[in-house]
Amino acid sequence: MPKQISSSLTVLSVSDVARSRAYYRDVLGFDVTDWWAQRDGLSGLALKLHQSPDPGRIFPNPPEPGSELGIDVSAYVDTWAALDSLYEEFRSKGAVIAMEPTIYADGGPWKEFVVEDPDGYHLAFGGVDGSRAHCSIDPHIRSVFVWVRDLNRAVERYAKLLGLEVRGQDRYDHLHVFRLDNGSEMILDSNGMEDAPVPDKGPVLFKLSTYDIDQAAKEAQEIGFDIVYGIQRLPQVSFFNIRDVDGNTIMICQDHTGVGS
Image 1 (cartoon, rainbow, N blue to C red):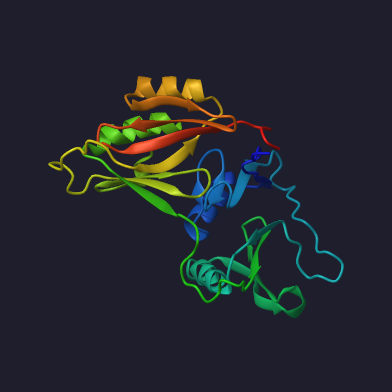
Image 2 (image 1 turned 180 degrees about the horizontal axis):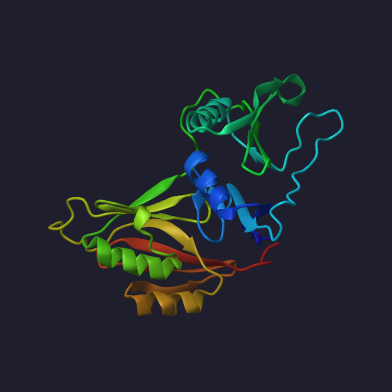
């Protein structure tokens, strides 16, 4: 069966939500909005920071029997090199380190450190030094680049297509970064594109998902994208390709839940 739950968030009740948002944003490098705080997307480490009606009643988890620290949130990191890099980033920005990196022989071995937030919540970061430790390339697509000629126009259209907010902090001169829910980024880049010719055709750059293929096609056309070849309907999947004014082609796809399961 196709995946139905795409992410989850841990809710932390905090004494001062403005202080907590600043700490998670400026010290721990989270992308913080009024709705959530997330690091590496909603499928990475994602939290909801809720203002407690009684700031004096904040209850972090107590330690397990035999442990010195209670853990409120645990995050997995793929390799020790990435874990060490994360530790150095947090430490250099003034994070409160509740437990220095520690190796547990019976966990694979397992290496872990713990960060404390302003309310005493403990966030544990750990992992095993997996079979890919010899490889310096992370097998995740972090970002895709989309070349555009008019950055403002492209940002407006792609924001509508993705249902995302246009935020000033995501603009970097000739670049605009859309931070997607799964932790990847779509980067619109207009550098040197003013006089570049629009290609007649090109390959699909990447795929986006939808739960309603017909509504998605209607919305894409209303926003200003051209549909290439129309909707293709197969037993397990339906899809269509859209093309923007800069010649970029993107697939929109709907998996049919339960088919073939």
